[in-house]
Amino acid sequence: MAGQAMSMHPDIAELREKYELAAESPTGKAVAGLTFLTGLYLAISPWVVGFNGFTTLTVNNLVVGIALAMLALGFASAYGHTHGIAWVTPVIGIWTIISVWVVSGQVATAATIWSNVVTGVIALLLGLGAASAVRAWGR
Image (cartoon, rainbow, N blue to C red; front, side, top):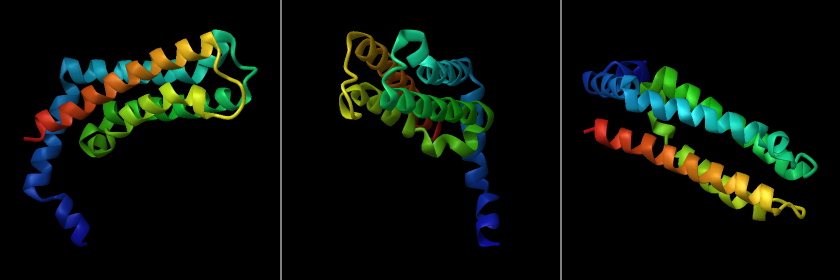
C-alpha cells in the first residue's frame, strides 16, 4: 500500500509527466526510434556483415541487440516509467565496442571491428542523449 501511495505522490506524477513530454518531443521520438533501429541492426549484424561463423560474437550481438531494441521500445512507450534505466543504453554501447576483443575466440576481424565499433558508438551517443533528456526534463 505504501508503494502505491508513493507512486501517486504529486511530485512523482509531475516528474513522470515531464518525462512523457520529453519522450513525445521530436528529439525524444528520434532518439527512441534510432535506438530501436540500432538494436535491430546489432541483432542482425552477424548475418548482414557476414560474421555469423563466430558463434560467441553472433550470440552476443543477437542478445545485446534485442535488449537494446527492447529498451528503446520501453523508452518510446512508457518513458515516464523507464527513464531510470536510460543509463543502460550507453553501457550497452560501450560493451558493443569492446565485445569484439572480450568475447572468447578469434573474432576480431576488420568486419567485426568496424560493425561493432560504429554500432557501439551510435548506441553510446543515443544513450547519452536519452540520459541527458532525463537530466534536462527532471529539473
